[in-house]
Image (cartoon, rainbow, N blue to C red; front, side, top):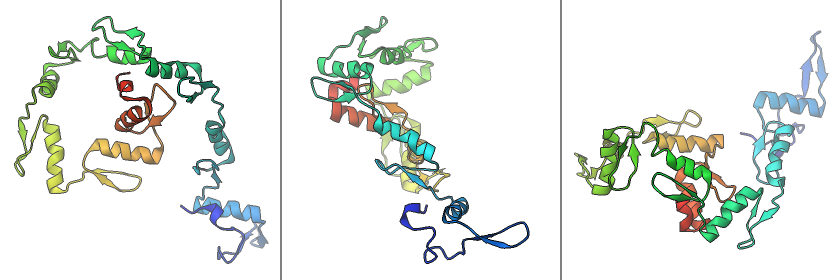
Length: 247
């Protein structure tokens, strides 16, 4: 994509077109610099507006103005222990618990404790409703017996699925299928935006988020978001300590 800031749209040495248009009578009229720039932008889909803070590009002045509020937002809640700043008190409270170790929300079924109510509610899903098959080792629940048996291999270390090419073994057949593609070179999942191909669908999903800007994984202790779960885990370890992984 061309950068409108990289050239002067009214410089004929840069754009080898005359800034003219025909009226209804077929006569040519000279366009103003501003009108010509808008006309060229329509044909070339030039992104005219850029955030001066992060250089992200937008198609209108309103969009870049709305985006700037992210940078301009005042962070008035600060942690007295480490000095980190937050937009609201609830984020600060959750963050402070990473220092104190406080976990005031507990599961009545298994007794596990959590730093906030949203994490507790997320945890309760393993106990509730249709998940009636329970692991006798860790207590995790599953919807059916086949999922439970697949989970048990995490504890037993059993790997019944073997690669016929190199002999490597896997606990799940889906992992074997992905592994075999490393031998065959097959990349069946394609990005419709840039055409890049991937060996598994999850890698494609993460890649597409790089185009869309989607970041669905949020840190409960600060305001940062990430495009994949592993990046969130890495962030928690580095910024909040290993104890934050259990939050």
